[in-house]
Structures are given as structure tokens and as C-alpha cells.
Length: 187
Image 1 (cartoon, rainbow, N blue to C red):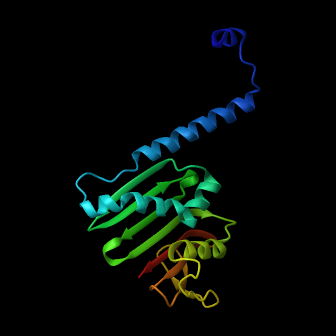
Image 2 (image 1 turned 180 degrees about the vertical axis):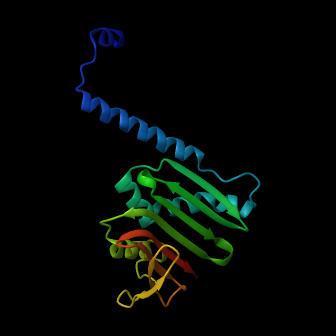
Image 3 (image 1 turned 90 degrees about the vertical axis):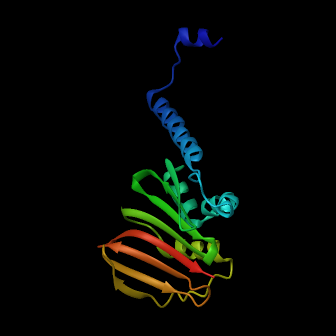
């Protein structure tokens, strides 16, 4: 049957074929990212035991879900462990990168979404979603009406500080474009 279809020629309009091929390649890239995202050899047993939950938490984060919705499945994933801190980094289309670093021993976490000069991003709702995804529905007491501004290496930085878990949300900009969003806490 399949040979008969091949002999007759499969008549698919060209744009549809391109879309199907792109979908298959994106799925293959996501599958490759899924398979390659593993801890390096020789990590401490406590880190290895916590790995599945750390990865699930990263993929449940508001930043990861936003990037996956906007840019599709990640094309690459890399895990590293330095001094007991686990970093998981996902690469998305358009050079977007999501990285989370978790240090279970000191109960700290950092979620960073790098957005190389993308415009039109609603940062405040996304930061608030990440706050709730990180520390729970009650959040960590960030007063979103009191921004703290400073100058970072790549341009202006706007920070918001919470009164629970030493949490902080940051927006790094370059001129009028968002460069990165960051949420960190330690509790």
C-alpha cells in the first residue's frame, strides 16, 4: 500500500509539506534535548536522587512554560553541577535561553530567562507568575509598586525585593528592549 502511494506520488501542497517537515524537525530537536539533559557522571548521590524533581520544577516554572509556548520545544538542554548547585539550561529558538540554578543545601534558587533584545514582552505578569511558581500562591511579599533601579553591565536594571525568603525579581534592559528576567529566592 505504501509503495502504491509512493509510485502515484503524494500530492501535498508545498507550504503544507514545509510545515510538516518543520514540525518533525522541531519534535526531533525536542527529543534530542530530552535525551541529552542528564547529570554529568560522578555527582553526589543526594544530587542524583534530587535530579528528577529539580528537572520537573524547572520545566514547571513560569519562565520555561512561557518560552516553550512562545518558541516551541527547547532545542538543547545542558545540566551542570558545581559545588552541589545544579544548573539546568535550555536553549530555545531566537537565542532565547532559560537557566535555573538550585542549591538544595542552602535552599536557594535562581530562574533566569535570557531574551536577546526581544521587544513586546509583558514582563510584570511573567515575573509575578514566576514568583508564585517558585514560592507558592501567596508569593514572597514583593512590593511591585516599589522598583529599585540601577545600572548593570548591559544597561538599566529594575529590581523588586520581597520580605519573605530573601526573594528578588529583576528586569535587565538594553535601551528599550528586555535582555533578561530573573527571579531568585533563598529560604
